[in-house]
Amino acid sequence: MTKYIKYLLLLLLLFPALSYGQVIIVGDGEIVAVGVTKIFLSGDWTNNSSGAGYTASNTSRVYFNSANPQSISGSTITNFTSIQIRNTGANGFQLNNDIKVIDTLSLDRGIIHTNSHTVFFEGDGDSEGAAINRFIDGLIIRTGTGNFRFDVGKGGKYAPLWAYGLSGQTGSISTEYFYKSTPPNNTSVSSPLVKVSDVEYWHMNSTLSARVRLYWKDGAESGIKSIDPDSLKLAIYNGSNWVEEAAAIYASASVTSGYISTDNNISLSSLDVTFGSTNNIANPLPIELLSFTAQCQKQDVIIEWSTVSEENNNYFTLLRSEDAEHYEEIAQILGAGNSNEVLNYSYQDWNAASGQYYYMLKQTDFDGKNETFTPVFVSCKETKEVSLKILYDANQVYALLSNAESGSRYNMMIIDHTGRIVVQETQRVNAQNFYRIPYEQLASGLYSIIYFTDDGSERLNQKVFIK
Image (cartoon, rainbow, N blue to C red):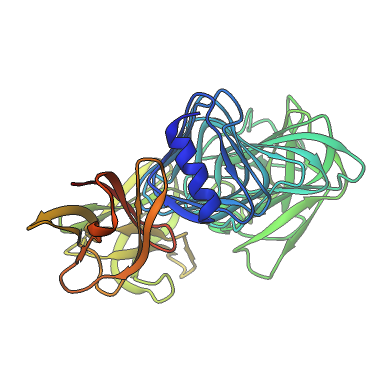
């Protein structure tokens, strides 16, 4: 077991909530999280242990908390009892290896990109908190009993699927969602269907049978313009054709969100499923919007969108908000009227790259009807990273916290070369941003000075030599 792991084990036993830049487990190293242990990470988790590498009680949790890219990787799959994703980085959270969740995966902020790896849920393992911009982009495999909601999505679109009616059945179910992807052989449909979506579908595989519930969180994105049960259908692929499966629709009078659920259990063996329609006017399937993005460029924000087809399109309205609730109109852009080709649009929001904004797109027909698309978020606000430096002056030793916010609180620890904590105290940032290290309490040698916040969002570490 490496010295690093020994020190980490000692700290976990002494302090149940600690913050780290990253965790690297090598050799026969293992982290044992006992009791209510909280590990806050602002960096990556790498498990190259020859054993399990990490074991924890069901009250322990690992928090991935950062605005920068984070990942889980290594040669050994980590079994997380409880894990929370609080990543607000533009690239989300990346998996470079499979992970297993035994109890809870909390999706607080950010998207988990699996990168062709898998998130396994075992036993009573479950996910919570999923919504737009916080879900699993990739394959989920659940092994256990009982109903399960697969919190899948793609890109910025959250599209959960629920498998239920599993009483008395035990086994594995795999589910993945595909967006802006054409379902297999989607032009071959059986009556009464006239078409199925060509922008989204779900793929499942299992030896079990279950009732299947498909959710839509944005009717415009899914091309759903009517919840008439004679029009909107649930379609499954039988290997050669898309056929209607008896199902019921659950939605409010609005088509903004809802779900459609099969009436009976169906086989999940290599199952492709999506929305179908018997009416090409009420539910045209697919949507006309292909993409909608916003990105910082010097002092401006560039908003771009593309359509794959337009019918009776008069103009677009672009709106901006700082809180995702109160929007103001900033531009109107003429549409093409009617088109069956991909058309690209863009708008430059001048001098907007110093803040954080939500942009929303609304499309209006010549007859006055309109639909609004899911907003996109962009953050161009410059932030300065807090840094820690050790200063020596006239036999005195100081810690300098550069760019720290005045009044913010930091926990400070001094750890000797054996991993023993010799000094621990709480400090608040003052006007000078530097603090005297009580060197007279320390024997000669090399020490680690660690500053970390209560929520684990920041962790700073520097070496200091005491003569």
